[in-house]
Amino acid sequence: MQQPGSHQIQPIDSLTPFLGGKWWIRARVTDKTDIRTWNKPTSQGKLFSFTLIDESAAIRATVFNDAVDTFEPLIVNGQVYYFSGGQVKNANRRFSNVNNDYELTFDRSSEIMLARQDTSTAALPMQRYNFVPIELLKQREVGSLVDVLGVVLKVDEVSSITQKSTGRELVKRNVKMGDMTAAVEVTFWNDEAKAWCYPVGTVVALRQLKVGSFDGVTLSSTYQTKIDINPTDLPDVKKLAAWYVTTGGANVTSLSSQGLGAASGAGGESDRGRKYLDEIQSEGIGRGLKPEYVDVRCVPIYFKQDAQWYDACPTCNKKVTEEGAQGDRFRCEKCDKTVTPTQRYLVSIQVTDNVSQAWLTLFNEAGIEFFGMEAAELKRRAQEDPLYIAKLAQGRMNRPVVMRLRVKEETSSNAMTGEESDRLRMSVVRISEFMPIAGTSEETRRRLAQNLRTECDEILRLIEAYV
Image (cartoon, rainbow, N blue to C red; front, side, top):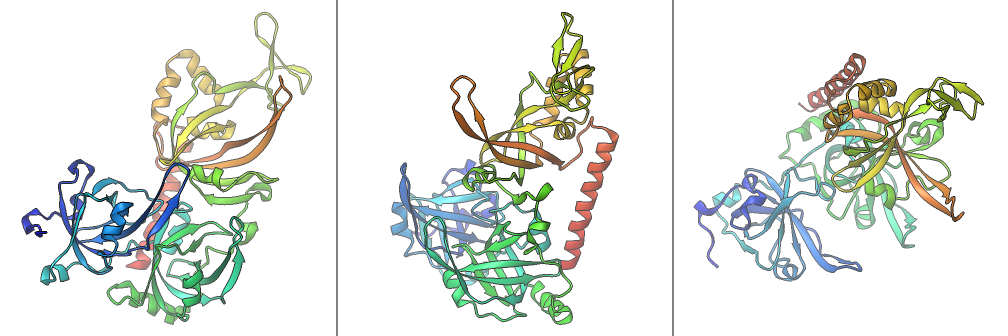
């Protein structure tokens, strides 16, 4: 097979889904995984993946099914190849932390051939990292993959646990890693746990670690994890080594092992950290005796516009009922008296995190944060302008936010049949806007702006620690 000419080669950062398969790239292979298989009721198959690097960027690539037997023996870590005929698609950030919006998939129709070794291939980078300062791990979604550069601060002995789902015994070792911003516990599993031989004070570059939230922020190795010891081509290695010699790593706080007291919600309910919506179901969150709390980065896409509030008793906040033919009198059954009601929010809203969707409930405090006004004010404006809520929705939808959710499974009974059923209820406790919304109160805008300034100051502080 004839190798493509230099005029046919394009850089990785120019690849887009609009090109189809009519492109050639020349790239170095790193982080090649073993072959993995899956067997589900709807499908079965096998795959392996690797990262491609050239002068412009890096991109994750996966080979599926029949093409695995063809290409897996050919592809070797560190070698340079020509690639063509792959599909360019949006990257799934849950399975890769490569700094690229796209990823590649190859099948039997793709072309992969070894490149001649010359000065141009030798000039391609050997590795690309996407390091995250340890302090910023608090802002990463649970389950996402990250690269970390740090110093070994403590090495625990090997231990074993029994995996509940399979009954299999797993070997583990916890290693405390630190940089100039914070420290974190990293768990290595099985062969990596047994083989760990790097002493305290060693600078280690760790790639493709999974973010967890057990007892604070934690990291764990995956089948994609790679370990580079004292990588001399990274300028921050010497800086970290000097920092450890000077401080011993004692001047940073650990994000891990904070204990339930530090990682709990109001009243001692468990805080499960940052999650995807589908992980709430798959991990059984909220099915215990007490509510659990999670943070979800999501986008509101729809809310029911027929009812956003209810008439409430000003004393107990329970819903009141109308009395009299004019509908101008209201009675609270709990307080057993006629009252002048106020309005409180009760909103059903649909959100997406780009993986799945869910319906959430906003009660009064969260409703005020979402709409930027009290429910009584929203009712007044809606009565003056029947289209006001529809106009307001345009400004509130499709804006990225972080929502703290209260998750609890509750049992309800069917009034007709008397049968009981369990339902997972998710209500919004707090909403954090990335940017202030025009039209909100001055107090809200100031609070959001201050939060943004604080976050920016913290990011600048972490950047300065690395410069």
